[in-house]
Length: 486
Image 1 (cartoon, rainbow, N blue to C red):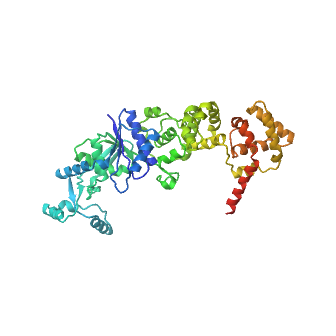
Image 2: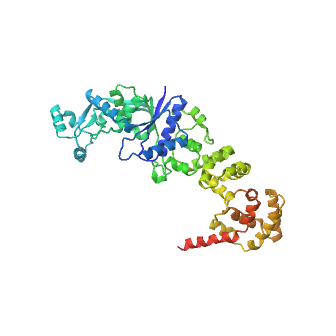
Image 3: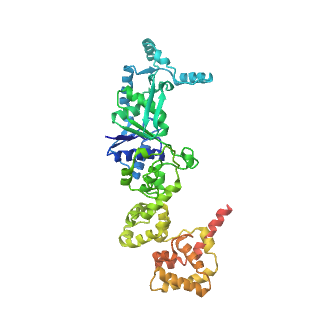
């Protein structure tokens, strides 16, 4: 039975690299009908917070990940780690170390100044029982170090193949700090043994930790899980992804209007491909296709353009009612949603979303395009006003076009187009002057779907009112001039 775990540290928001690790563990567990365990590694008391723990759970739920066991909080299991470390001392596989950090640093600098490689010199391994007792009487706190055995540690990495390390390159690492708190190596191995983890899937930055942890499994007399290390995600500059590339927290992408399924697809396909790159896969399809053997060893690039493409594709392919369900919370935030909107204008709203979704990359884009159709006020873009509403001929022709629109018996796109083109011909102007001007008056911006479909959905009453806003729209240029002069 496959048992995997995801073990984030609540010292910050969930990073996209950590999320990919969670996704691969979750997909692997679901593919094999196994168990996905969630563990919160919160033993770093100074940096961990309950708020960060909550945000991690929130991010996982948003993407669609659930867990079968947990969350297990390491901060509630400290005595378990202390007992485990003491057992290794009793078995002669670990020892007490009374060296202070200052003493170790001084010896490190001396060794390096001589051009030699430093590793802990096992000074405390040679202490007699009376010397240890003397340290205790003087109140000197002791850490517990693992006694690294001679030989070679090797394992078959599920991604990289055979990895072998000469144990003489490993120092006797600390298991339990002098303050009684476990190190990462001790707590992770004790928890993995306790929760019967069979596969450890994590980032390449943990490869150096694996030999030490394998030695610990062996020291505890427990089965060693299979290890697989994922290539690190790179930014567009092909350096390790970090905050310098922009906000990389998962919830940031939720708040920018990306759909959970699109984000799931994007993250899952960093180092792994389910088959077709031009497709948005369902969760079920990804579970069925997932395998560690198809993970690339090369580091993937976090390409925001790919995420936007996937999100836009999903927005355009999603059933309308489902898309509007995703859109509803965003409209509620902007106070644009009401029960009557859905109850009484469902058909109109579906036509509107259908019209504008092909131009939307995110739910934020959709909201911005929906807003002018529902709001009473229009926010005019000064650049659009300056380009399309400053022609003095509009002062005379727009009122005439308004009368034409008011008189049409059917307020439909074909009829509105016929009327507008006839007015342009009568006035001896190009229809584009009126088309671009109307777009800005109605929506406040220079770009939109087909203007006649827009006018039809805007409705006769709201269209006629906004056609009177020429003076108001031009006033937006005053604020633009003020900003440029400041």
